[in-house]
Amino acid sequence: MNKYFNGEWKFKEILVSYRNGEVWVYLTFEKDIVLRKPKHVMGIDINFDNITYTILDTNGSIVSMGTIPFNGLKRALAHKIIAEKIQRKYPKEWRFVRGIREAVRRHGRRARNILTDSSHYISRRLVEIAKEYNALIVLEDLNKLRKRANGTRKFNKKLSLWTYKRIQLYINYKALIESLPVAYIDPRNTSKTSPIGGELEFTNYRWVKLPSGHIVTRDIVASWNLALRGLNLLTRDVGLRGFMEALNVPDGDEAPNPMKGKPVPKLTLGS
View 1 (cartoon, one colour):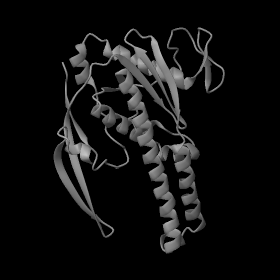
View 2: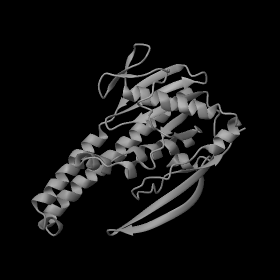
View 3: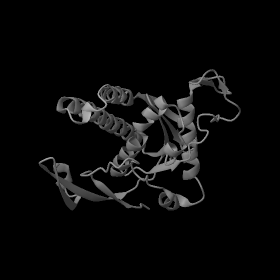
């Protein structure tokens, strides 16, 4: 909390709410942000079990690639499944029997906490890497993902816990605090298009062979293509200021879950 009183952050507002016999106080701060001129581009592909990134320089050459394991969704899903099994086993009782109701709530809270903690860890790690390279962060524009998904029940259950939006939201505000720009790119065909030209040869769902003969994962291909599209956006003939003004900010989590109490950056464009 002390870091918000060091002169960089300005106090904005205080919010007070009363819930379940407890008073909650939220302090909101803001600070001016001057976005850096990026020297690299970092494409990030978020998946159920890992996050893959590719970093390019302004000439399009690969500087770094990496994969960060992510098991938060799998762990949260296990708790949600347990809660649903309890509800099915006691379809009428679970709402009125205190012990059963508390068991359902306990697993639900555990699932939410796992997702929140995992999302914070992943987003913080990615922003640290982007800061090291002074990179423009490129994310997938997934605003219509839920509307387009018509999968199986199992997939939709996973989708109900989809953390893409939350991770992206956390990346966005953590990146802005570090003065790093974030762009959202249309992700269509990013895992199906060769980033070096030619055609991809699909070994199976996960592995593909590049025209150069190298075998990589589809996640690498997707993050690579996202970085290339971000680089194309960065090098258009609109100038840096025009690029910064063209950056779109995410709409936030589709499920109502505002980040009360989080610092709110105030953007200022650099020269």
